[in-house]
Amino acid sequence: MEKKWWHGKAAYQIYPKSFCDSNGDGIGDLQGICGKLDYLKDLGIDLVWISPIYQSPFVDQGYDISDYYALDKAFGTMEDMDRLLAEAKKRDIRIIMDLVVNHCSDQHEWFKKAIEDPYGPYGKYFYILEGRDGKVPCNWRSYFGGSVWDKLPGHDNLYYLHMFAKEQPDLNWENPLLREEIYRMIRWWLEKGVAGFRLDAIINIKKDLRFKDFPADREDGMCSCSQMLKYAKGVHEFLQEMKEKAFKPYGAFTIGELFDFRKEELKRYIGTEGCFESIFDFAPHLLGGSGKGWYDRKKVTPDQYRDAVFASKAFSQDTGMMANIIENHDEPRGVSHYLPEGEVTEESKKMLGGLMMMAVGLPFLYQGQEIGMTNQTFTDICQVEDISTLDEYQVALDHGLSREEALKAVARMSRDNARTPMQWDDSPHAGFTAGKPWLKENENYREVNVKEQEGREDSVLSFYRAMLKLRKSVEYGEAIVYGKQIPWMEKEKEFMAFYRKGEKRQLLVLANFRKEERKVQVKEEIRRIVADNCRKVSAWGMEEPKEWKEGLLLKGYQFLVLDVTP
Ligand code: GLC
Ligand code: CA
Picture (tube, rainbow, N blue to C red):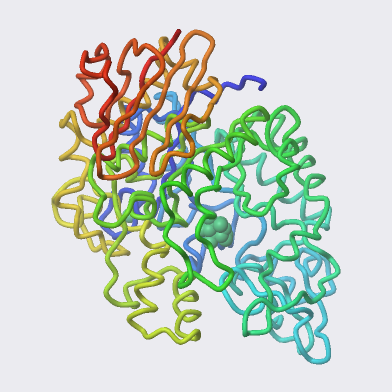
């Protein structure tokens, strides 16, 4: 694998609306982020992705952009942005933006002009088709429910395509003029000092232009629009062009959000010839999924989790570096999702985080993960803001679930779980705002917050800090960043263990993924305990205790990193 400047770094996602509110309007903002840069630096973060802050009607929380060159007033001014970039630079932190270019907002001037004149130049910025026998052009279902087609306002038999909400019309990448507009906009932000982008839903920019029906996969007679991705060929040509014309001249860092890509094409996405620097590793997040909807999702078991991570690393680690996550703004909180109910403790939270940080890949934390934030408790559907959750709730009701069952089913998966305010301290609203937060905070903020964990050596936060420090250490950095990941005892139930074999150092990572203890016989001589989630961080670095010679006794959810260099 070709070495890159970012391989040894650590990254962090900020969901700006919920991170820190500086002016008491209940919405997080750029000044709020600015005030927390030292916190991020202390945590060991080098790269920060901020979810969309552009001007937006917020139908999909900013993923519907009405002006790519303007910031939404809720987040602050362009001066605030310049100050944030300058302050971040002082601390050697790079800021990357969200690039949402599969679609824009129906309030964008391009779309307004397309409505005025569908056959004019801006009509060609979108996919506008005539209906078929007075009906929609084909039977694709959008990711957020309902047809991907909606009537172009004011035109009887014209429909426009939207893979997401109807307020998010898809941009027509086949049109070279549209592509040039996008590249110009990217260069404009890079000129400003942004270090790169996370590319939203990017695989969707190439469509199967036949726009034909596929067999229905639900009672509604439609099929998921992701079906068409199987037949949409040539996305790489767009992506390579974007790289050449926009990213490469600036040495930008790019990370793609890709769900449905062909595995054999990995080389075209990452590594030497890839069109991105990295992509997120979503392998564990796909587990338990169901074509029927969230209500039908299965709980993920520890063995499934391990197998998914191992398979993903086996197929990717020689090609390039993917980014490891346990959660993001679209997923439930990792600790609530991957740990068995009733077994979510500080130890198990640290174990899950430790596994993520020790696996090959760029650790990409999501705000609040570092203190072990958990899912929200929803008691009524009116507490939900997220468009996708509301759709899934309806899907569950339509399937015959009671309101109570439907709420329970979607609550586990709701994207709002991760969007509750960041828990800074135990003051009202978790110290996120002096006003009323736009989304209710999680009640557990009195126990789970940054302030409480900051000075405590055995806290989740201290653990994350120590693990990220290890990644940069002279002693173990090379093994953690570049060491080959090799599974160990992968058939053992509720157990996840692997080697990281570096040039100088060899590490063995052990995780007892259950609450009962377990005895393990390590073959190698243990030189040192590099990390241990059951001990405070100042006690790490010990020699192997004598009693381990007889076999090592792992406590429930214990996580160990051992130096077993021959
Ligand atoms: C991506 C975003 C998600 C958004 C969708 C449409 O998946 O992460 O939040 O709803 O794209 O832009
Ligand atoms: Ca604010």
